[in-house]
Image 1: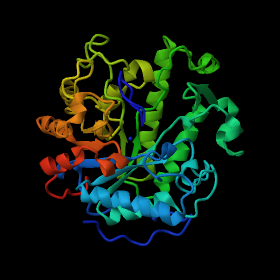
Image 2: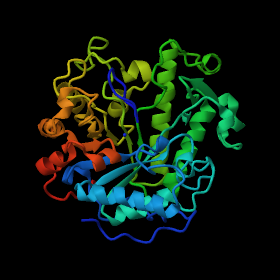
Image 3: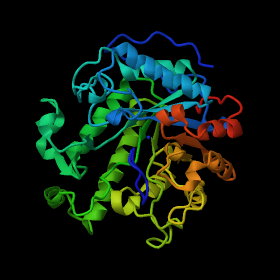
Length: 417
């Protein structure tokens, strides 16, 4: 996960476990709706953490571990979530157009074995769902729709990778490969690939982060000239067409999730600034360098107002009082945005900054994050918080997470659903 508005840095007592599914097996899906007995965030609030798998950021700690070692690390993260009185984990299961389950659409993820397409000998997503639910945790399955690779060499992808079978789907940009969001066949394919997991597993939510069209790279243009020429008719400009492409992906995915299995929510965690007020009077009182509407062609405010998503978790990864993007100004803006829509609001928190010597003095104070939760509590629309990320929940170098738990999570939370 990367949110970049200005300064954002790169890259986000246990219950009894049950037996993990056999390798390649899918966890049975309940007949209808959600897992019985789960409660919504209003009865205890979302207390979640992201578990990032891309480039082994959080888990597995390195590629090539044995299946047993990978599973032990995963359950360690889940146990730690319970110990910190959290109630949800957001597990990245499609990091780079590959999969942490036996997908018929895409290869096994490279982060597991070090070799894309190699069977790891177990079913990580299936196991994660079972083990999370055994601990009273929700499992939100985190997908990245368009990122194909963190390099620009298609030959490094497994031979039958869809990006190699359909090279016309792929755009190199900023040292990475992306699927072209303007192609209808791409939009259909990425939905099929993601919804395969929803059809197989009792996930509690589908979750996307902040990547739509890629973050701007100075001196480069995302080369979708041919796609725009073929599909951009009727739009005032390319930016409007690109936003419509992302709108269609969000709207269609929302509908298809409900068709696939009722009770599964759809949540998106965008960068924290939709637009600055200087750009749009409806925007926030910020001067951030990245605005999702303009730079990522992601009209996050519209998705809330249209009710296409069940929750939004803006990454408000800045301290209270920061001039360019003040946490104390962004939380009320998002609270006002969701008010009356029925869309849940969870605030994404930059735990990874706490104690990082490269960050400002505010982040050296163990109480900064706790103050965030205190401030957010004054806004009833805020239904909880998500912390980036699992390895920082574990390391907690200055005790910021421990302070949050002591100040705000004194009682064990119900699961958000």
